[in-house]
Image (cartoon, rainbow, N blue to C red):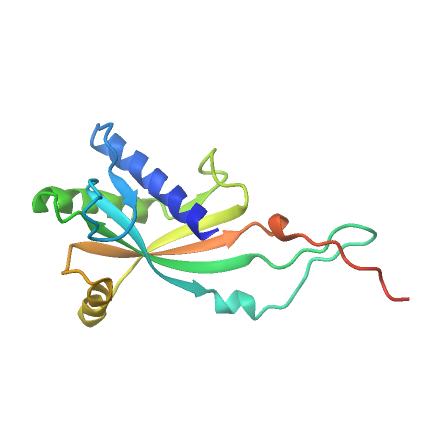
Length: 175
């Protein structure tokens, strides 16, 4: 689920930036920040995974009569990713591409099967928002990445997975 969500967002953002800059070259790569092998202007890297605790506290199951399946609640996960400019790129150009990516994220926060024909079938939706970090927290993030600071934004991606991928058949009923 995590890899599918990040690959999807990477592809959507890449397509948007290619259209914005009238370019056929790849604009975004999913990988490690600061990697020497990355040649794209931007890199997306996973920082943290957080289970959505509010939805986990709701213990319900959809149950129907007869032999119909029993399904678990939707799986809600928050992914925190960093979108950073490539240190090999011209600084001013990197800031321009990062600004365009930020604008796209703010203007297109919801991604699902209605907004994208090729949306992954086992996901229900993805919701993106820019997640602000204090300067102190930013410093700790870059230290943990083992990199010197690069202009970047942190994005919180709320992932809701499709319950159909986890349907189980109930055992016989007790009478």
